[in-house]
Length: 156
Image 1: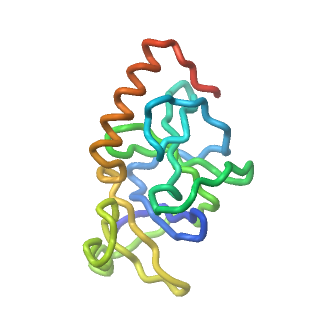
Image 2 (image 1 turned 45 degrees about the vertical axis):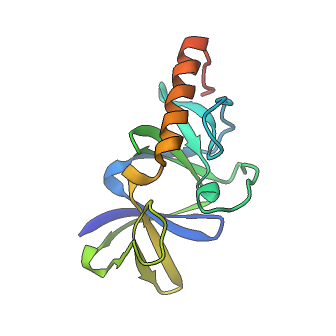
């Protein structure tokens, strides 16, 4: 069985393997991170660690939306980075049989490991190692290196 944390972002149900998730924190406005790429909203200091905040809505191809204090940030290891995903609602931890996943290749994006059929629709299971694309990882690495040298401090 796979343990997943299921959440909702702008009307889309998604899940991440629980093993890659560290915690959920209240939404906060991140500090800008110049050159990090369009999916990156900025950085936050979470318990002394710099967390790159990403907008999963943008990954889904949706227009940018302002942050809402009612949202939360799921802190997880994504594509080699400590990242925070802005979510509208966390549904909780579930156990799913991997054999019941529809293959991610069936009309899904490269960051989707598979899909789970729910009573009210589908849940996309995100593959954490493929969430950020190669060009995004390169931009983000450069931006983080520049921030470290420039003395940018992420807000707590």
